[in-house]
Length: 383
Length: 131
Image 1 (cartoon, chains in turn orange, cyan):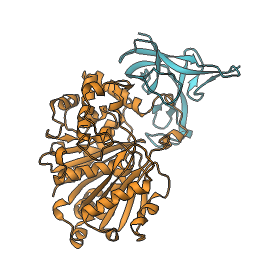
Image 2 (cartoon, each protein chain N blue to C red):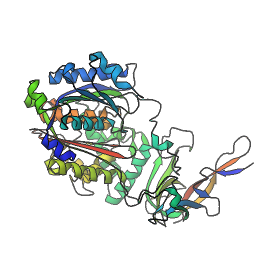
Image 3 (cartoon, helix red, strand yellow):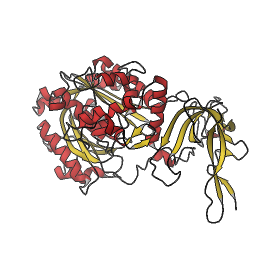
Image 4 (cartoon, rainbow over the protein chains, first blue to last red):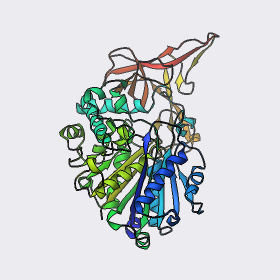
């Protein structure tokens, strides 16, 4: 049985969401961060910890054994707990595992949590693989994306200012999000200062801080048994994960991988790009929103910058891109990020996003890519 | 005093320098950097690879000048290019000199870095614009 028939045979829903604000590294422990998010998610769903059958913790930086020392403080119920690491998509993969567990029938109520605290470096394993390359020591992620920006701008005749407008929009969205690490409206002039690499400036690069996000995934049976409010339960209609294939030399792997994973998710959901009202993408760097808008089929190649300028990707436009503020403004604490995206999509589909509400949002997508390279996409729908 | 390449497995110290990739005997895929494990196209083990010389010449597909770096070397600002080699593989490397733009033709050369206390010199591959 493939995932598609699993999710349609035994539907799964997000019934609770909770976050700890994303913030710069502080003295707060990861236990405190994670518990805040899970407690809020339990309260949001109006279920108790004793009702939870299993937990997945998305984390890339904490080290082994993070879950039990944290979650046992809600009561040492002895449930299965598993850490999930998938680079920047760790949280997305914890959601994917939770959905699979509920869809399989093994559990009715599962928590997917993301929590992390930044360390000195990311400690990415590909650098330890023993495969030498020329760029080691000179090309870090922001330069990888600055090079993609250079290629894109040259190919499509797009200016630095047009790319920077993605960041202006997402900082504006983040200013309305109490969970965002960056909550300031920024002018185009401000965004264009402080060059980092190529056309990318500081405010076009995401902050990597700390935080936590949790969602509670439940089956129909779980919703019935625990008398969970059905009107606030949003269905997960696709959960797709892919890794980088062998692409033609020179093709931007991030966009090609996103196109494949997005297509798999749309097929699973029986939906297409024009159905999306809300889209949280991996905008770790401003150029990525343009690349992924096109890769996911929301517009033709080369059109995304004009769509941003026209306001089409604003809250209130045809599809609100990163109403949370995205990685650029809400932040990218690694483990929590993908879970936080799903929480934002759920909030939008419920109509509970307040001043950053996309009107009449019925379908939303959460998209992450991670070093390695991996891509994870979820599509959620208001039943 | 010795002269050592920064990446001894990737380069031949000749003038002009040669990049050393691999060719999979089973599926004929040519790849750079060379891989000690196996073929991403057909799955053959690396014992099925032969070394494959690649000319350090190509054209610039993308370019970025780096203003902030987490290490003292290379000193900022420096410029990185995505270079499509004439034989197909694509590499990222530092391009020296002014005037590099998308579409520039570039060639490799060996640039000496600062010698250590014993006077040993590390040379690294850089590219420069030919036209």
